[in-house]
Length: 399
Image (cartoon, rainbow, N blue to C red):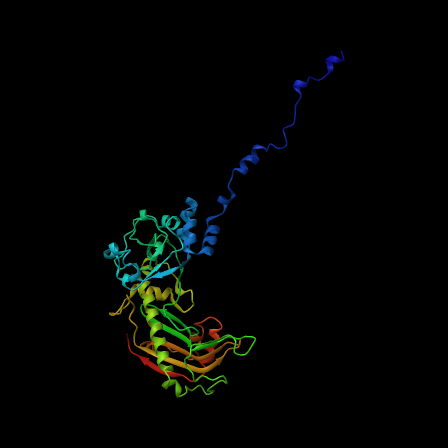
């Protein structure tokens, strides 16, 4: 009787192994939580990235990324090198007829993404009809299958910025950075400019110095001297802000005229090249074209961009650049200018430029705030110090 009451081992209930997850947990693990992020958060990340090459890579990660990248509002285009027409004519001779008039100025080439990396090329998408006056700026990293009018140099396919940016539909803030400034200046010479344009030049500020002395542990260390403005002295020079007589006789004035004209030509050439991008992207609120050296900055705000779309620019008949109107200029000069951080500018010169016709339509700002705000520190402080000195007025004809 006792043996019949023992449990049957075959009917015993065993607990499930602890390492086997329940069905609910298995379903949760199959979900990609990255896909649960909202589009607005991903767009925030893409806008922080900004760089057009990185965005080109992002857009081939997934179909979702490919859909979101064109909605980015903040885009940065960095140029790796500059190839002149003379250097690339043999490689692109067969495409000469398909080039726009910009090709006779210069072409900017992105060499950072070589042909094997097709990310940026895939982002370019299908061919679009381009205006006959397309930019001669070229961006590397495309594919031969894209169908765009391409240039090839050293095995890299190049597209114009207009083509690279054409699939961005919501750009509000665009920054283009050249590899270096256009103006070849001697070592030790300081030359910076900032220009604002609408359909033509609105204003331009130029800051220059014949040499820069950086603070150092010993006297005379960190001196950068180009040999110009030999009359500059180390005791502060002229305290009343007047320009010394030697400025007119030793080439100092001639040098400043060259700086001014060269800066205006560089600014007007940059402005001319931006036409296709401005026409294509009507959502732009701000456009900045600068260079890695920090030599020159061209800026356009929303009102100025709209002005260019409504009122086409006047092109110079001599070259591919915007015509510079007749100008009124104010000049400040200091033989020796010591900044609060110890940097010394020898032969420091500040030039503020506005079109002559603006003197009638726009009230001149007497405190010079627009001039001193043109540069980052420490050069903003230098501009503020210079505008307190004696002012010299000049005029320049249109060119």
